[in-house]
Length: 184
Image 1 (spheres, rainbow, N blue to C red):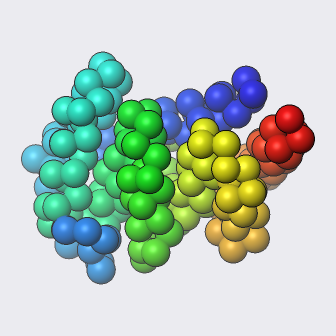
Image 2 (tube, rainbow, N blue to C red):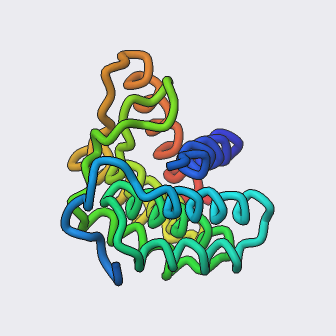
């Protein structure tokens, strides 16, 4: 359980720290660099989340998703909105947002936000977040379904062998924790 929490915190911190349309993702990026005002709005939303001002952060993330932004900015705002919604126990809404990420044309190989992660891996992480959300609801078969989807269809992408090994190890631990919870 502690490992699952550590994974959730790590993934959350990864995207929340990333500085930088209506429902659904924009089809393509508007330009190479994001508008500085959009970057500022994302940073403000992230700060609200970190300060545990979840409702205000939710409003800010939703506003960002409605603006014309780069697809990658939409992806980060969407991911962070999903994390925020789950923190508020708005599980169905969180799953809907993560599913929009899965249905999007986000490029999983967009640059990561830190040296230890080369790529954003939006689809892989969205699968994990849906699995974590179902696990929080004790819907273990659905949780496992999304863990398997992360492992088969939306695989973790990296140039780092150690990162790949760690992702596999973490995936195994989460799957084993879900299976153990099913037996209780």
